[in-house]
Amino acid sequence: MGRTEKSQGLAPPTVRKDIRAKQARHIINKTIPAILASNSKARKGADESELIVDPGPIKIGGVQDGVANEGSGEIQYLKRKGQGKRKIKGGVGDNDMASRAGHEGGYKGKVKGKRRQESIEENLSQLSLQPPQPSSPTPELKIRILATDTLTAAQTLKFSATKHNSNKKHLNICILNMASPLRPGGGVLSGATSQEEFLCARTTLLPSLKESFYRLPELGGIFTPNVLVFRSAGPLGSAKSRLGPGERYWVDVVSAGMLRFPELEGGEEETRRLGKNDREAVEKKMRAVLRIACQKEAKKLVLGAWGCGAYGNPVTDIAQAWRKVLDGETNSGKKSKNVSDVERWNGVEEVIFAVSNEKMAAEFAKAFGKGIEVEKGPDRIAEDEEEDDEEDQAAEELKAKIGEMESQLALVWNPDLKARMGVILDGLRAQLQERE
Image 1: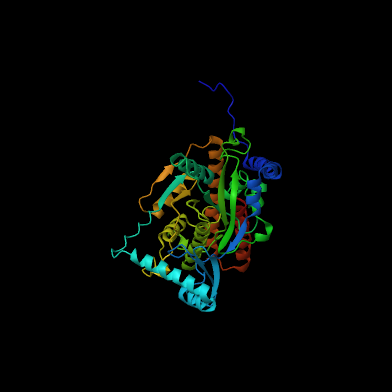
Image 2: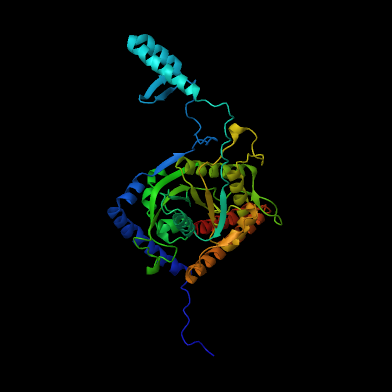
């Protein structure tokens, strides 16, 4: 039996890319400005974005390193009940301040000193000799790996939290924008389909990525509060992907860049991995992102296979680096025994790694370990899935060609041939970069 209807094939990739570029330009030039003009919260969030460079470590108590301690020569503040804050210098204590006030204030100071003494005696009488109760242990961080996109993962977190605690006010979900370090939005206006372009065409993120913030720092990134999500993960041309006023939701975003085309170690028949210096650089970038999230009091995070795919970072190395950083391990691969060196991500309750490619998600989960299995995300639209598969296949072919030429180039001794091969290799890398 034959088909009753004519089959509808996909347009060539270049045509589909041009269509996506046209749709993205309409959203960025028309839709987003209209939303910002009518929504003060979204407009304020875009205006309040900030560039945070090399954030300091978070200590066990949740205090950022670099805050003045008692006994230092820096200005400190002393707060007393009923008296507000008072500035002190050089770590002057309560007793010194009270003694000085008593001598200089005459009879009034003596009355205050007597009242303070009575208060101290009352507090002493209420002291208990029983040992203090041990503090409740920090709840274990919940980690999941979802084979879905960043926004679908954020929506899953957002509405599951609302469902279980409908009466409580919730902070926004914080997501990582795996950003281009060179230009705001990456290739969104040219129809590219990586994660950053995906976000910029469906949220109010792009106006917050100011030109003055670029090039992005090696450590740190841009923090944008109250980014409005107004489209779902469906194709840009589909009316079904538009979210109604009651379906829209808010997220906070950290935009940061990963290593691009790092030098990989390993022979032709070996698995190619990051070198030691690059692994340490990757871990520092990840710590900086988590520090920003903790400073902004994020409780739920959506991360991903950062730098994998077009940027050429091995999935195994990225997954293991995330696990190491989240566990608070040192560069030696062991958890630090020195309490002052331990960096805990206090306040973070749940982390989802959103990896849209199922094959990559499985590889990520295997490398991450801890028995975490990949969870299936919501069913994706068939056309969108076919586009992603084709883009992934083309990128994989380009990476294979680049790797083959790099190995051949190392064996060539003729200068002219080496130069010609270098030009071809640069062209292949440029093609791969266009698919970021």
